Image (cartoon, rainbow, N blue to C red; front, top):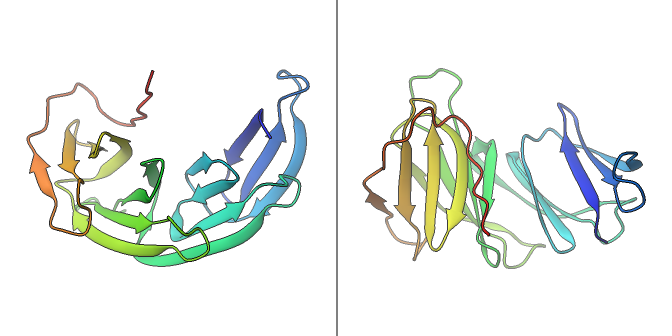
Length: 174
């Protein structure tokens, strides 16, 4: 189904239909979950949190949990490579610890696994994926880039470009 809008709040993922009238969304469903980010791919949505969840939304009126995996860190922001790996960045509320990036293998939505974790150089505030590289925005106005060509091995840090006020990031590919 096309024309779906996904919103997250403190306690729910809410799904609306925009295909009839984009100015008057039609409520389809609420799914009770604490999440900060959602990524849609085909009939699945991936939800951030202390447990990364995968929902089947082939019927958006009744989303169904099909897979989940509890990582060592609660992810807030997600990025997806479009085929196999989902990347989540967590940040520490204390402001003194670096963020942790968790890499999930979601090639089987019913059995996702944690592949790797690595510490970043600061407090992550957003994440994006492009061409085997994960970009992580930092609250300290910097951005880091990591080569994830082989996410099972130690990740190579790529020198960050300077960005002004890099607080939240979303990569849009044209």
